[in-house]
Every structure is written in structure tokens, then in C-alpha cells.
Image (cartoon, rainbow, N blue to C red; front, side):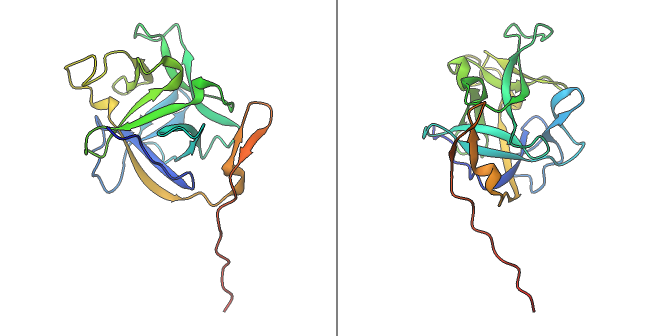
Length: 191
């Protein structure tokens, strides 16, 4: 199936199909930062930028509107994680480390995407414990598992444009390594 194509100049609401249908006009539960870590929750409508990386189809850095360009979604070791992968999603200082690069692949023509972090050789998909944290699961619907895993089916809804040049830069960890031209802005007319 086809790799995802996201617009880096759009803020996206992200959810998963255990709690949100891909065709829903409004997402009431979205991926967001909470005091307990990353959750798919109804607290607030936080949004994400999908920044293409390495000129590789479907590969993105994920940045969060409330966390700023200095932090990106990463995979992190967590000895407290119930799943044997002991790996969860977390926010980390921005870098171009593989732990912060994520593949998104269309699941048929459903409007949903399979999310696989690059650092795990695509052997794991991002999943969600019901009402709790994101984790890496080696039981992947349609690949290594015949069971339904609705929380592995990620859905996106465009919220608004980014239109901020600071968000067009990719950070290596110490400094900016590349930058896209800033998006065109429309001047407000004074009448």
C-alpha cells in the first residue's frame, strides 16, 4: 500500500480508530501531551506538524504545537511498560535520530494509516493501551496478527495552516540542518 503524503504546512489532529472513525468530521479524541505522557484524549485539541525527512516517502518527524520546534515525538525505553517491547511514545529534544523518524503507510483505502517508527526496523507498530499510553506492538494487524487492532489504525484531520517559518526548519540536535522556504503569507488588507 501507499506511503502517506502529509503537508508540512498543516497542523493535523491525530487520532486512532478505537476512539475515532476516519470519516468523522470532528475528532473528539486526539493525540496530545498530558501530565501522564502522550495520550489519545478529549482534553484539548492539540495539533501536530508532519515534517518530511530524508526525502524518503512516508517518513516524518512529528512536532507538537504546544511543545514547540525544540521537541519531537520519539520512541523511548520504559521498563514500566506492560508490553514486552518496553517501548513507548514520548517527547524528546529535537534531533534527526531514527527514534524520532516515523513511517506512515496507508491501510487500503480506509483513510487510516499504519505508524511504524524507523528505529525499530518496521517490526513494531504504534498502538495504544485503552485509556492509557502509546506503545510499540509486534502484533501488527494484517502482518503478524489476524486479530483486529483498531488503535493501530491512525487517522488525521487537517486543523489549520502552520504559516510560520520557524516550523520549516529541521533540527539535528545542536543546530538547524536544513530549512524549507517559509510558507507564503497573505497580507491583511486595510480598507
